[in-house]
Length: 254
Image (cartoon, rainbow, N blue to C red; front, side, top):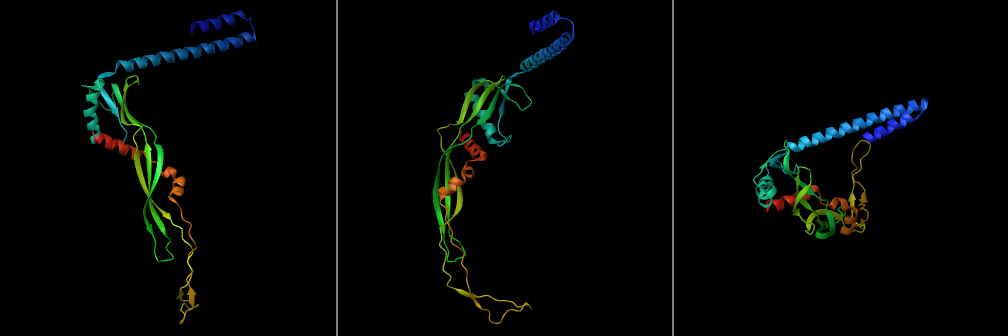
């Protein structure tokens, strides 16, 4: 940095007096101020980082979990009991809260789901003699998927020391959703008639109302489960809560 400033000053001295010299002097001064501020910022940052590293508590560690597991949840007890048994870095160390600077931190990490396939399963069909009620079918759509979930042990510099795999990528999970789909129906033939009461201007019904035919509804085009899957892939995708529930079951099985 000092060499850059000296070069700028030597260049300014070589120019003759005049407007160009004043412009270069102004630019040189401005450059010196910027470089000085940058150098001061680097020094302060280094001092702050060094001070933070000096304040690291080597006898404590912290676990960062999603809000799904509130403090006091059984998962916290399982992790604090089991992890020190398989991790020498946190063995015989005290668990601390948010307002601490421990030597090691365990961080929760979970990937997005990867969809393998969708499997439709027919549950039942609904048919009635009422021509105004259209037929339908109930299907259960199963989504087979996978994901990865781990606990990462990081040191005070954020470097990953160990990865504890909770859910591996070769595991297959299923989430199901029941849907009601319309079945195909042809338009019924109007054969029945019914007396429909008509009212005059005095709001008095006719003594012998005329027979009027029942007008059936139009035909209905059915929908296959595969057509529903193609239209609703996002709705069939497992949610964050679905995957967290899988991890919760696995931890509670330890």
